Structure formats: C-alpha cells, structure tokens
Length: 391
Image 1 (cartoon, helix red, strand yellow):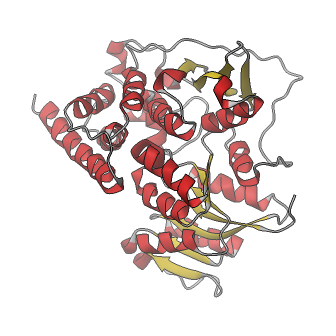
Image 2 (image 1 turned 90 degrees about the vertical axis):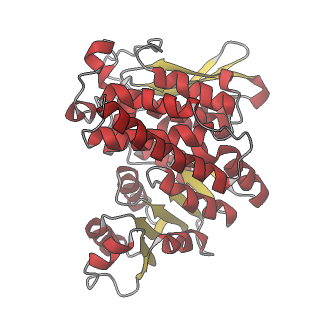
C-alpha cells in the first residue's frame, strides 16, 4: 500500500455525504487530504470547512451566493473560485487523485463528466450522473481509463459482493430498501401525507430531496437505473426487497444459489471510506454492528401497487436512452413542488409516469440531448402540477 497522500476533491462538501467524507478524511491519519471543496449556496459552512481543512481551493457554484459571502477569514493560501466553471476547474487539476461527487441532482452531472474526462477516479454519490447519462458516463470512463466507484450504500454493497465471484456467474442483484416511513400505509392514507411526515426517515439522516425520494421509493427506482449501467446488468437482473432495519445494504445472487450480502449499521462513512481507500480496507470511524445484542433482520417483497416508482425504475432501466433522464428530471421537479406544498405526495410518481409515457424517446442521446430531456421533463411536471391544481 502506497504511503503517498491521496488528494481528494469533495464536491457537495456542505451536504450530508460531504460532511461525512470530511470526517473520514480527518480520521485517515494523514493518508488522505481534502485538496479542494465545492458547494452550491451554503457558503458559511464552506468557509468554516476551509478554515478547518486548509484546502488549496474552494468553489461556490452559485455566483450570487459567492458574492454575498464575506471571505475575509478565508485562509490566505486557499484560492476562491466562483461559478460552475470554478467547480470544473477543481476536478481537472493535475494533483487530484479522487473526486467525491456528492452534488445532489443532475447539477452534479457536468462535474462528474469533467472528472472522468480528465481520467480521475470518481467516488460517485451523485446517482443522477448515471441515471441521466449512464452509458455515456461508463463509455467515457473506459475511454479515459478512469474509474467509477460507488458511494451509495446499496451500490457499494453490490460492488463488494461482486468480488465473491465472476461477473458471468451473477444471476441477479438484489437492492434493499428500508421502505421509508409509509411502507404499510394504504393508498388512501398516502394521499394525506404531509411534507413533515415525508421528511422523517426512520433510519437514515439525509437532505430533504433524498428523504422524500426514500418515502416514495423513487430513490430505489433511480438506484435500479444506476445499477443497470454501473454494473453492466440487464433490467431483469435487478430486484428490490424491503428491509426496514437497513442493516443488509444489498445482495448478489450467483448462479449456484449462493447469496452474498454486505452488512453494517446505516452509517454512510463506511461506503465513503471504502470508495476512497479501494482496493484496500483500513480502520475507520463508521459505526459497527454489536454482535453481543440480539437483532432481527426482516425482508418483505415490495408492493408495486402502493409504490409504482419501483416499476417505473425497472421500465426506465430496460428502455435506456432518454428514459432515465426524463424520470430524473420529472422527479426532481415533482419533489420540489411537493415540498412547496403545490403537489400531493401521492401525485409525485404519477407525474413522473405521465411525463415518461408522453416524451419523445431517443434510444441513443448524446450528453446534451440527455440533459435537454431532463430539462424538458421538469417543465412538463410544472404544467402537469398546474393542471392538477385547476381540477
């Protein structure tokens, strides 16, 4: 194992994944360094992070937020970059080893693309990069000899379990889902879910958008699409099981019937560290299972009628093309409208399905066309929500 310090760019450093990443780096005994940080609008926290980690540079994606902040307390040796171009500059610097991509939503796609184009290893927490541009991203990584390592707990679990056999021996991948707070609610009760209810996840602590996605199970739909491209699977090789305890993070079933699972408490620091130190394992700061205490692990088949998002994810994964981009854009817009109180919880997934079924499908889009499909879907959801309000 090399003693050289690994330089890490942390994109989305002020979010939950970014903050956990900085904890992992701080506990690495100097083997890793946060060489630069990037955030969108949370400049006050970004400034404090720069003061505590002394990076070479920081970037603020939102120019207005960057201009409002008083940067007089920024360490003198730290360069300040403002705007999306500044973020892209961070990931292409020659001394960068790993780019931790944790910017939420499709906004993280361009920086992920730039990192892969520069031949960097990308520790990917931004699932939308593969949902919107899966085949384009994986092809770019192959051409540039770059690597995509999963940070999502489910995909990290699959990545680890796949090392137990050869790819041609895999029968299917089984992604686990907590089921969110509403897994036992009737369809009638789902129509009455309030924003505060949807933001109270039973096991994970995440940002509002991802928490709502976990409640609708749209996060699992997006993870299905991501797994399709990340692991070069067919859609019919991906299954989902409800596992409320969030201890088994996912499984790989092999042709002989063996099922290899990865278990740990619901602590994102473990998959983050594994991505940053792969192919090695090191002592870490993540919570550990306590085998001196009794525990029960429960698994339930998903209810596709109650949570149509799962079916939608499988359909989009099978279709490929612009389907993933449309589902992603529609969902981001629908979740935003729900949080604003302008769309019912039970209307989020139907809005996404309506937009997907009515879009002009392109089986082989380039990156700009995929992003255009994502943008079109967002506008369609706005029109869809307005039509629902007028009914």
